[in-house]
Amino acid sequence: MSALSVRQVRLRYLTLYGLRWLPTGLTIPVMILLMQERGLTLSQIGLVSTAQGLVVLALELPTGGLADALGSRVVLVTAWAVSLLSLGLFAVADSFALFFLVWALQGVYRALDSGPLDSWYVESTLAADRDADYEPGLGFAGTVAGVTIAGGALLSGGLIALGPVGPVSALTVPVLVAAALQAVALVVLLFLVVETGPARGAGALRASVVAAPRMVRQAVGLLRRSRVLLALVSVELFWGFGMVTFESLLPVRLADVVGDPERAAALLGPANSAAWLVSAAGAAATPLLLRWLGAAPAAGLLRILQGVTVLGMGLLAGPAGVLVAYLACYAVHGASNPLHLGLLHRQVDGPYRTSVISLNSMMGQPGFALGAVLLTALADRSGVGTAMVVGAVALAVAAPLYLPVWWVGRRAVPGAARPDDVPGGEPGNVPVGAGSGTVTATSAGTGLRATPAGADPRDVQPAGSAASAEPHRAAP
Image (cartoon, rainbow, N blue to C red; front, side):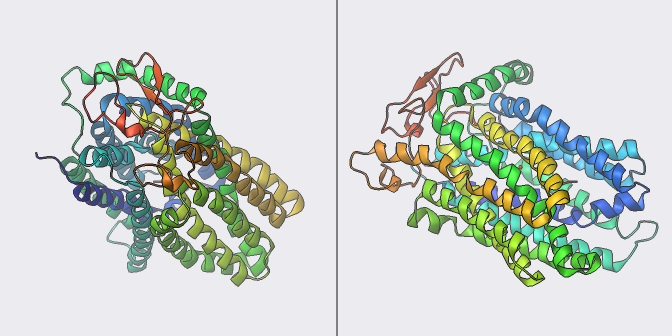
C-alpha cells in the first residue's frame, strides 16, 4: 500500500475514534439499571465495578510498553476484540461473578486501548509530513468522541423506548446493538490501521513481551530526566482528583438544589447528552486556542477556568445555575484534553511514546481514587458545596505545572516573546528534557540522549533507525 497522506491519516483516525466511542454511548444509560434488573444490589454493583480500576492500574504501563515494542495495530486489534467479548458477556451476565468478569475484561480493554490509536495517528502523520501539526486532529477527535457518545446515548434511549424484543429485555437491546457495532469497528480497524514501521516477523510477539518491561523502565526514566515531562504527567493527579466533582458529586449537588432526587435524575439525563456535545464544541476550539495563546498558556488557563466552573457548580443557587456551570465545565474539559495530549506528545521521541501516554493516564487513577475518598467524606461532613470548592481548587492549582514547558519554549528561540515562535510554527512545539533538551531514546534501548535546545525533537531519530520510528482514558 502506498504511503498515506496527512489528510488520509486524519480521516482514518477520526473514523476509528468515532467507532471506538459509539458503543460506550449506547451502554452508559443502561449499565447500572441492567445490573439491577439482573439481581445485583447497589453495593454489589460498586464492588464489581472496582475490577476495572484494579486491572487498569495493574496493566496500564505494561500494555503501554507492549504497544511501544510490538506496534499499535496488534494491540488495538486485541483491545477491541476484548471489548467485543466483554459486551457479549455483559448482554447475558446474570450473577455477581459474571459481572465482575465483565468489568475485569473492560479493564483489560481500557489498559490496552489507552494510547495506541493516538500514537498511531501522531506517528503516521509525522511519517507523511515531518512538519505537520497533529494537535488539530487530536482536538477534532475530542469533538468526534463527544458527538458519538451523545448520539449513542440518544440512540440507547430510543431503543429502550421501543421496549423489549421478544425474550430480550428493553435494557439489553442497547448492549446487543453496541456489541454489533463493536464487531463492525473491529473489522474497520483491520482495514484502516497501517503501521508506519517495518513489518514484524513471526517471533515479534515473544520478543515484544520480553521487551515490554524494558520499555516501561525507559519510559519511567524519561520522567526522571525531564522536569517538563514530569510536570505534565503530574497535572493528571490534580485533574483526576478534581474530576470527582463533576463525575460523582454533581448528581448529589443537583438533587440538593432541586429538592427532589427523581426530578434531578430527569434533568440530568438530557444534561449528560448536552455535556458531551459542549465537550465536543470545546475540543473543536483547540485550533483557535493554539493560534491565540499557544498550547502551554491555553492549557494552564483552562485548568483555572475549569476550577471556576466547578466553583460555580458548588456555589450557585438553583438548578439552572448548577447546570449552566456543569455544561461550561464540560466545554473546558473538552478543550483541555487535546491541548494536554499535544504537549505530552511533543516531549517524547523514539519508541516510548505510548508508554509515556500510559503513564499520564495511570496517574489519574490514584488521583481520582483519593478524590473519591476525601471529597465524598467532606461532602458528608460539610456539604457537597464545600467538597466542590475543594475540588475546584485542586483543578486550578495544577495550572503552574504548565510553566516549565512554556519557559523552555521561550528559551528555545533567543528573544522569543511566545512559545508560538519556535521554528516549525507549532505552538508548544518545544524541545524539552533534562535541563534544556528533549529526552530521546537510543535505538538499542539501553540509554537516553539529550537533543540540543532549539532542535525539533522530530528531527532526531533513534541512532540507526529508519526515518519514521515505530510508535508505539465509562464502563462497558
